[in-house]
Image (cartoon, rainbow, N blue to C red; front, side, top):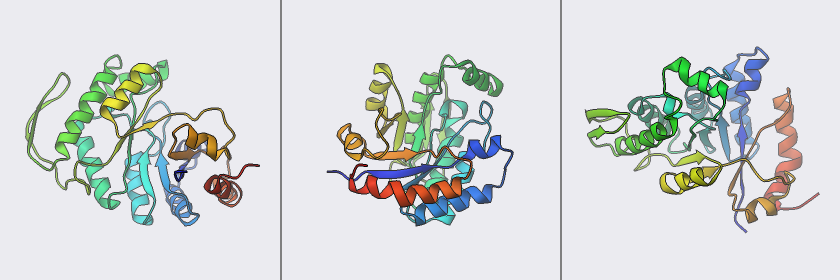
Length: 247
C-alpha cells in the first residue's frame, strides 16, 4: 500500500482571530512539525476576507527553520496577483527551500466575501478562473529560466526573465483546489496534483484515504493550544495513520 504523507496547516487565521501576531511562534510550530515526523507544512492565503500572515513570507521563514518537510500555500489565489511577480516569489521560495515547495493554488470560493476581496484588490471576480489558468501558463513559461514574451487575455508582457529560476526544472509542482466536474477537468489539464476536502471518514481510517486515491493528507487542528495539539496528534494519531491501524 502506498505511503500516506501527513501535513500540518499552520494556524495563521486562528492566531490572527485571537489577536496573536507572533509569527516566530508559527515558524517554531513548523520546525516542531518536522521534528515530530510530519511530511509537510502549509499556510493559508486570504489578505482581506480572512486576514492572516502572508503565506509566502511565512513559508520563506519556515524554509530556513526546517530541512526536510515540503512547504506550500493552502491555497494561494493567483488571480489576485500578477504572474510575473508571483512566479518570481515562488521561484525564490523554491530556491530557499531547496526544492521543497508545493504550489497549492485555487480560484477562490464563489461567495460574497471572496468577491469583496477581489473587488478590494481591483481584480475581476467573474473572470478569476480564466485569470488563474492564464497565470499558471505564464508562470510555467517564466520558470523555464528563459526570456519570455506572453500575450494572453489578461496578461501581456515582452522579454521578461526572472532570476533566480526555481530549484527544479519547470518549477514547483502545482496542486489545484477543485470540486465539481469542470474543476476536476481543469486539474487534469493544468495541475500536478488535486487538493480537495477528504471524504467523510474517521481521521485514522488510513486505508479509506489511500483507497480513495489520497497520497497526502493535511490536517488542521481545531484547538486554541496548537502546541499541545500538535504534540498529541503526533503521539496518538500519527502512528495510526502511518501503520493503517484502526481504533
